[in-house]
Picture 1: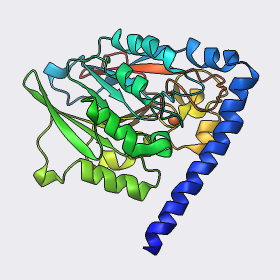
Picture 2: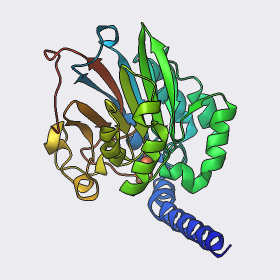
Picture 3: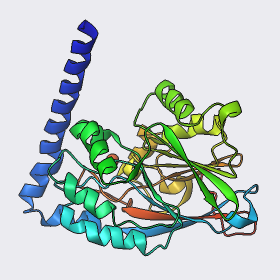
Length: 307
Ligand SMILES: [Fe+2]
């Protein structure tokens, strides 16, 4: 009982802190610029980042598999729901085989949730569209966001996995809920991806994790590619570009994996800078939708930005 009360107090304090930050850093700048500066700057430069990822064990049947990756929409004050059709059209134009949406769908506004869910339902990929929640979804009300996605028939993954069969191959798509402590991420990955002896055999294993540190336990569970967001690339980077240079900035101070493609052996992580944000300024760190093409051949044009 005492523990429950303490945890409720902690959750309320977190929410109040987030609301205060939201008013100071999001709502005020939007009001002071009559909405123009922040809204336009955040979405006008939405680009498509295309990367090839070499997985030497990838079956030939999956060579060329294309994954669309969106994250951190933060629909609310900075990214109004009116921009959603443009974002969804850009993602569908990739003609991806599978789409991953790695959380932070709304930003402290539950009233936009029906519009967000209706727009997301228009995302289209033959092997499915998969979702996980981010910390901002939980700040507003993770339970309601999850229920809205599920009621609309969207594939929300909360520490669980789906098996997808394609061209005689099995793809495991797993997703974990938000956590930031390594110990919690490890626990959630373990829960999502069953122990080896119970695990269905997969030719390709993907993990959706809002926090990029989900990559560490994912590597221990033979996940080929982890998809993450959360960092927004750090908002400020010294240089705009790929590789270590492109992630030098605030993100590299705050996060182990701030932005771009990382490799550990044959395991990969892609951390997208995201579509939106709660903070109204980005410098050398434009918003993006990622288009990741899986290759089995080493001669593909892969750029190992953070080997
Ligand atoms: Fe975010």
